[in-house]
Amino acid sequence: MADVEKKADTTVTSPPSPDIGPGTMKKRNKFLNAVKGHARDPNEYGKQLFEQALEYDEAQLERDALKVKRKIDFMILPLMCGTYMVSFLDKQTLNYSNTYGLQADTNMTGSDYSWVASALNIGWLVAAYPWNFALQRYPIGRLIGCMLFVWGTVCMLQAAVFNFSGFFAIRFFLGALEACISPAFILLTSMFWTQQEQSLRSSFWLACNGFSSIIGALLAYGSGNVTNLAIPNWKLIYLIVGCITIVWGFVIVFWLPDGPHNAKQLSEYERQVAVWRVSKNRIGLKHKEIKPYQIKEACMDPKVYLMLLMGAAVGILNGGVANFTSALIRGFGFEPLQASLMQTPGGAFEIIGCILFGYLSVSRKNMLGITIMLACLPGLAGLIGILTIPESQRYALVGMAWMQNVLGSPLILNWTLPGLNIAGHTKRTATLGMYFVFYCAGNIAGPHMFLADEVPRYPTAIKGLLGSYCALIVFQAIYTTLCFIENKRRDKAGLHVAEKDEEREGFDDLTDWENKHFRYVV
Picture (cartoon, rainbow, N blue to C red):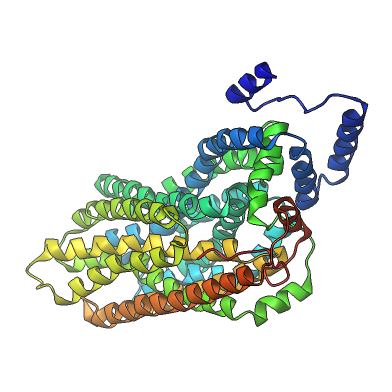
């Protein structure tokens, strides 16, 4: 037995069973047959993996769970980070190309650019709900990989349009394609990591927007320095980024799993441990059956409506910041090439902000809601600075613009709430669909607050963004309070059974209203 324990400390690939006999072999054969029978049902497959994991000593599972978590962190999380970095790079191409005469070459006037900026979010809004139900029914990894091929191609097509209507159409379809990325990653994060780990991991893949901002700004700077091109410099940006997206699509098709139950990077035993780890979330894995009563419950849950209002608030903020950073910096008196290069520190602000507040959210119990509210403060301070600092202090104004990139932290932490606090797969899918509809509506509205005759400070837009931050803080405070009160009520009522039975309940596809052993993350 000592040899067994020693082996368990160094590998998690093939530990021995507690006893090897006819009964155990029969149980193993029954398990393998069940796996074949439920190969297309992730939740049933996951339930079988969970039951198989319970055959092992819990102390050994705890030890091996740490190794499996590290393996997932180093093999699955980078795939998600890379995908999110590429997707944000695609979105930001409009911001970068605007620096090099996009509007003049395509004869955009008045609010045309704002509508092109909104087109991506209109496409996202239209496709958000259908994508969420497609993600519930079909393999997530292959769905994202195939989408990236199409997305990269459409991104390159932006170099072939010459007017406002063509650009609007292309950006609309880009948004419709991108609508699957964020909800897919929220679902994957909830299947690979525990409730206590999810906000930090989500912060890591969202922080890649910062890396994308740095890479994109340098790419735009390099493209702007290329001479003797047969096409305008801004078109070169779309061609390069589109090619990168298509190449990354091959990586995702072959390597991104649909959940811990079929991750190629894990052995059979490691998959059992991975499922056992997340069974503590009390939500199981992905359930393919659509249950109408859970959609009705989502529509009756007041906490869901608070999520939707918060989604609209962060959408307004994101729509303004993502599309007008370069315009803000140019308005402070910088040349196009300078404006491109000076956006790179903003990416560093986003990386640091996401990771710092991500760690804070998991530093102790009941810190998520407080962290979201604290993460709003740097953006608020930056907006006040843009309104009040004299225009002669242009570098100070640029610093205030960089602080807007910290928005990535409250945005991603708010995104995690449906994955953490909504149980029942159909209810979670319906909530995510509605959430991103409201988020996209906010993104559409955000750019239209920037009025062309208010350069460089855009006071109307800045005041609107200040109001959105304040609304987000208020809604988050109310939401956190409601969840805290409900947790206390359930604890006071003594709504607990044996831990293993509570974990089994998670695979029964119960909603957070039905499962009284479920506790909200606050």
